[in-house]
Image 1 (cartoon, rainbow, N blue to C red):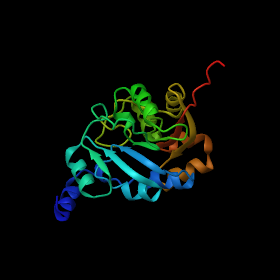
Image 2 (cartoon, rainbow, N blue to C red; image 1 turned 120 degrees about the vertical axis):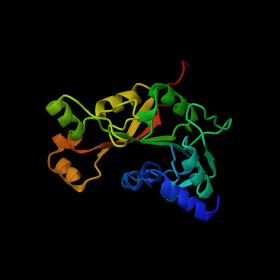
Image 3 (cartoon, helix red, strand yellow; image 1 turned 120 degrees about the horizontal axis):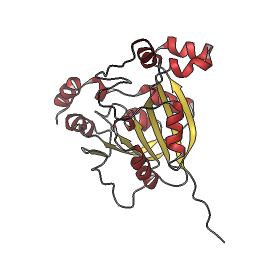
Image 4 (tube, rainbow, N blue to C red; image 1 turned 180 degrees about the vertical axis):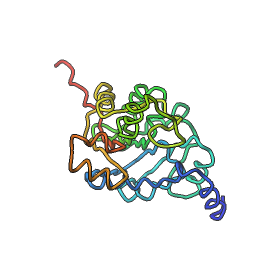
Length: 230
């Protein structure tokens, strides 16, 4: 794909695939969480987040993207060592390869079986320091809660918390429970809102934070195996 064609295809892709995820990179920097070594970005879209992941320390960067046009742009960008046009379920990792970090940036909610996914991820992360990095939409956000309280209803949308392709919904408690019950220890769990006013409200009234902030940013590591009997 030529550079001109690559730019043309990237411009035609939905914004969903062209998101550079500066918010996630900023969160990792603020928490001083490095992504050194081999990193896998699940749902890499058109690869716009790759420069940030490289800057955070990814020396080998691989991507998985089921949407073929976006995967083509990511592969043509030269930012990845490998891009697989595949679904997570169909993707086959290279035998014997472990990752220092695996990223699911607004992906887990699209998958039918997060428990199965976490079990697979746990086996692919390098022990003991391999990191699972997640961003998840917060279904307890005021935009959803108000609709339920005032109208007793919600409407699916083309993007956002109530994206019509979401199969799972998360609150702070359910996200924490999913990770804790499936072999992960939380390193960092932050709530985030794109709008400055939402961040200000959460800062002034912390108890209101989960209703004001639309996303969770999470870093977790596999639980260390218990030593066997002597």
